[in-house]
Image (cartoon, rainbow, N blue to C red):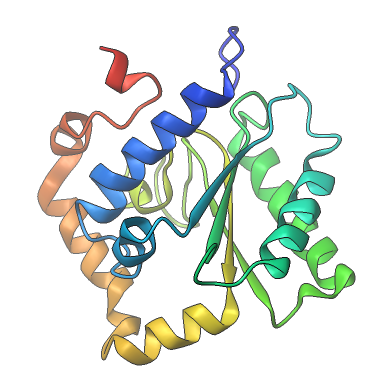
Amino acid sequence: MNTGATISAAQAQADTQRWLERAVIGLNLCPFAKAVHVRGQIHYAVYLPGEEADLIDALLLEAHELAARDPSERDTTLLIAPNTLADFLDFNDFTARAERRLMRAGFDGQFQLASFHPHYQFAGTEAEDITNATNRAPYPTLHLLREDSVSRAVEAFPDAEAIFGRNIQTLEALGAAGWDALDVDPGGAAR
């Protein structure tokens, strides 16, 4: 998300990893994230250009690289785009196009694509609704997940469909001030 200054790959990865550790894992928003994080199976890729023109190609490259690796080495990939798609609606449209391209490239049934954005907003919510934070990351981020890994994780978690509802309760209890205290906005670790 370009705010005038170009974000470096190192900063984007550090900010995203801090968000993952403090929010996603720290609040247990995704009960499956901790294991792959602890085992070092998350690959962080950063797309630095300020325009989206080649972002789908970068995503396809990451999908091919993920498919070529054993899940024990690399189970999932976060593709972070800190300098483009600052507008959530543009990002949401882009994500739909990216999903279609992944399918056409033959990855349907192999990967799922999850999306995170600093201004993520679920349909039917107000922009400031704290429950939107379940999908708010420091930068526009595309998450490639292996279908097999998701299926195994869901089987291991007896009430997977309850995760979303539990996350809403967690964030409502935390509130905006609690979310801010997590310090997961861009550059938070540098403060």
